[in-house]
Image (tube, rainbow, N blue to C red):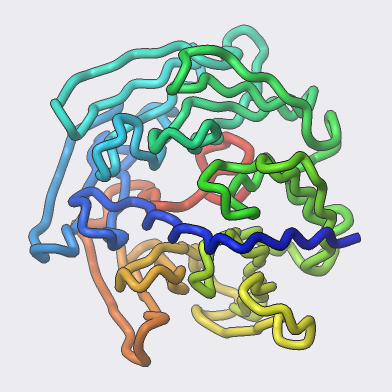
Length: 318
């Protein structure tokens, strides 16, 4: 079943993730777990940056979001052991510690799913609880908690939040690998979309993003065995034109798919991070050119940004 929402007002462009300098473009960046360092390159100036934020050789998880609403990505880590979020805000360099979620030490397995669920322009602290399929959001606009159930409790659902209806609020959504189905609940009106996209037993990686620039998050998966990207574009009303298949990356390798708007055209670009080389290969949507960037020395495990950790095991997309 697919529910289509029609709105006369065009949706606003979705913000580029991992935009540390606020120029509207995704910056190339990695998190070094061995050192707790964030290393990247500002797209506005092409200058390298490095920020120590997080404990070295720990289970700290790097998170992407604009928690203070200044238009720049903040340095934030989530500490699963005690469910503490530690923020270094870009607006004033203020440090904020917040406990949100169930600590791993208390038997919790919460997955952080930050997003702007209340539409105030600030990223909210949020977790998805696989055992109950509850989404627990700490709304920045009001400071109150919002708990909603979405997904199959204990069913292996992966959280894939995004703005699927274009109302400038993050929607709750899950991808079910066992059936290759997407279950999306629109924040604008509560309507539900169930979309089958992907193939069962193909170990596909869900990669929701706005690939066509219409202001709505599109359903998409990456197939590592073939390095193919299967997109289902929301920006066209013609069902025959919605599916799009692209190839980017090397099949049967350890390439990690990354999605960001690296050229600032409002469309998500295809990119892969090549572990062992610290190399990011980007296929720009606005042009035919390819961008290759190498960051730092290879030190232990590098976590590319803005990758997703859909089950909080410190490995992207697993």
